[in-house]
Amino acid sequence: MPASPSTARAINDRLALRLLQQEGPLTAGQLKQLTGLSRPTVADLVERLSAAGLVAVVGEAGEQRRGPNAKLYGIVADRAYLAALDVRTEGVSVIVSDLLGRVLAEASVPIGDDTGTGPAVEQAVALVERAAKEAGAMGAPPREGARAWGRLHTVGIGAPGLIDPATGELRDSSGLPAWHRRLVAALQERLPHARIIIENETNLAALAEQREGAARDRDTFVLLWLGHGTGAAVVLDGALRRGASGGTGEIGFLPVPGTGGLPSATDCAGGFHSLAAAGAIVGLAGECGVEADSAGAGAAELVRGAVGAVGGSAASGGAAARFLGALADRLTIGVASVVAVLDPGCVVLGGEVGQAGGGVLAGLVEERVRRMSPLVTEVRASVLGGGAVLRGALLTARDRAQDELFAPPGR
Image (cartoon, rainbow, N blue to C red; front, side, top):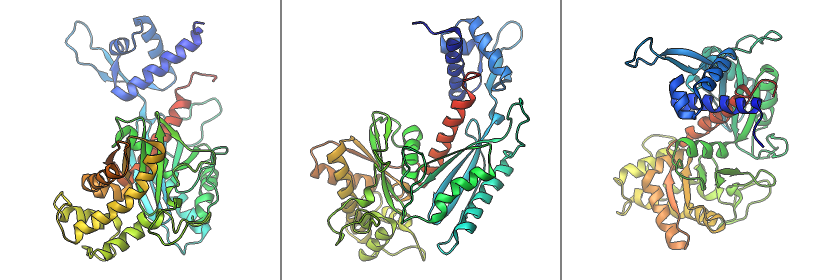
C-alpha cells in the first residue's frame, strides 16, 4: 500500500535532515541529487523545515553559474542542546554540545568515597548546570505554544551497573555508590524540561567505537572494557544485546582460573574482575618488576609505559615484556570465553587500558586466542579509550533528540 501524502512528507523530511547532518550544508540542488526527489518536492520540504526552525540558510554555494548563487541550507545547531555524563565511582565528567554534536563546554569533578549521598548528588548536578550555562543551554522554559529554542533538550548518562530493560532505570547494586541511582531523579527535578536517559557505560563505549572508533567496519563485535572495573558489550548484527535482565556483558563475574576463589551474586571478587580490573593490573605490574614513572600511576599509565619500553614489540625479555605477556595471558582468559560462546569475529580492548595497550597488547591477546580457539578472531585496540563513554552518551542523546525534533508535527 503506497504511503499517504503526510507519511511521504515525513519520510522525505527526515531523509533531508539526516543528509544535512551527515554531509553538512547543502543546496536545494544537492538535496535533489542525493535524495532523488523532484525539484518541487525538495522546495516544499525546505520550506517546511525552515518554518519548523530546523533548517536555515547558512551561506551560498559560490558556484560559477548565471544569476544568484544557490543558497546553502544547514541544520539550526542551536535549536536544542545536549549533555552527556560519564558517571564513575570516583567522579563525574560532562560535556554539552549543540544539535550537530559540536562540544561547547566540558567539565569534571572528583567525588571521594567519603562524600555523602546528598553532597555527591549536589556536586554532580551543579556540574551539569554550570556546563550548560557556559554553553548557553539554560534557556527559559517555552511559553505555551512557543518553540523550545536553545534549551537543554536531552541528557545522556553513562554509568556502571545494570540498566533494567523494562524501566530503563539503573538497578540497585551493592558495589556502586548510592548517589549513582539518586542522580537521575535529581537531574530530572532540576531540569524538568530535559529528557534524561541512562545506559550502561560499556554499552555506550561500544556504540561510540562502532560509529566513530575501532569497530566502524563491524556490525558484530564485542567490546571488552578495561578500566576501574571490567565489563563487556555485545553487538550482534548491528544491534546491542542487553539480555533478559540487562546483564549481558557482566564479565567481571565470570568464574575464571587463577583467582583463588569464586565470585558471588553481590561481589565479583574471584571473577574475571580480579584478573583484569585496574587494581589487579597495578598489582601484576609490581609482581613483574615494572616501576611506575610517577608515584600513584594507574593501570593505563603502567601499560602505556610498558608498551613504550618494549619499542612496539613484546618479543624481547625484560620486566615490561613480562608484564605485557602476563597481562595478555589474563585478558585472553576472558576473551577466549566470549569467543567460544558468541564467535563475534572481532573483540575490541576498550577503556583507558585497552587504548594504552594499543596494537602491541591487542596483538599479544590475538596471538593467544588463536592458539586456544579454532574460531578466527581479530583483536583490536580502542581508538576512543575512556572518552568512549562520553562520546557514546552524546551520540545517544543526539539520536533521542533528533527522533523527537525531526518527527512530523502531531506525532
